[in-house]
Amino acid sequence: MKKAHLLIIAVLALSAGFIVSWIVSDSKPVKLEAGLWFGDQAKILPDFQLLDHNNQTLGKSELSGKWSLMFFGYTHCPDICPTSLQTLSDMLNSIDDIDVRRKVQIIFISVDPDRDTPTILKTYVQYFHPDLIGASAPLSELNRLTSVIGIAHSRDKITGNQRVYGVSHSSAIVLLNPEVEFAGLFGAPHDGHAMARDLVKIIERN
Amino acid sequence: MIKPLFFIALFFFSAPGSAESLQITEAWIKNLPMVVPMRAGYMNITNNGSSKIAIESLASESFEKIEIHQSIEIDGMMSMQPIHGLAVLPGESIQLEPGGYHLMMMNPLQDLKLGDKIIVTLRYDNQTTQTIIMVVRK
Image 1: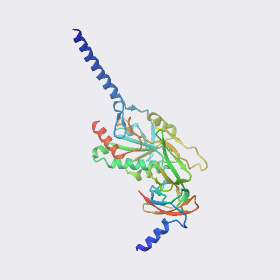
Image 2: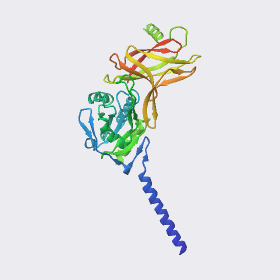
Image 3: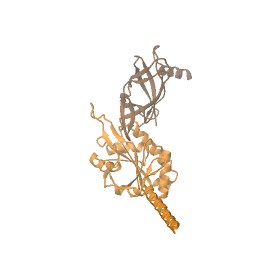
Image 4: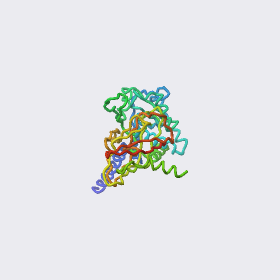
């Protein structure tokens, strides 16, 4: 009897252990080839209101229904931003499955709203890809979004010419799901092909 | 046809005088729409000589100002810092490439389009200058 009890206890403990580890592992972000996927732990975002490159409101309702990749930068950034936007554009083109590609939208969000008007943003983003969306908002509104998704940005100290300044910014690409929840993150350096493979897997399974 | 081209190339890629200079290859400028007043320039720099050479300054009639910058990432934040006097040791090569060292080319003084050849003059700390051609590329 004692042995049987011990066996039952052992089996129960083992099962409990499995269940606990399953729950714990499920709540952890899943490491993808090029980033992190939050799975069931996607974060609900507060309401925010950006202005897109056609002077139209871009908020949660406009973004819903598609998978959104958001990259934050500014048009006066000559090196990192063009490189990242080129990578994202090539990434979009490399998705062969048209149905999957149609479910993806790429949004370049300027953290330099003083200089990046909708007109400038439109010419800039569409240089890289006709489907790219440019957007921005006053910093206070931008921060409602960026503070929740952990995107830091700050204007460098201005010396001399007030129009010549840099803006430091997070290099991560943020993934929002069709419910406009913060669902994943792709860190730099960005590998467009690996990102495309990750996205296809995520979209096909969800 | 070949001969004049050869002499033009010789003119642009060799430094005047006998002082040592750097070998510059693959020099190009990232094309962007004209609404954007900044361009990044990239190149491979090799010092085949026997003494250290630093690039003191760069100038072009096609840009108001050119500086050497470096993109750096600290804790996931990207920023740029100016590099003063980029030095290349004998036998050393330095790549100016996306995401690292690059030329920060400010305020184009002319329309720039794909295929344009832009003349840029590098001034070294040994008081020599070298003129190169940078091609505007995608």
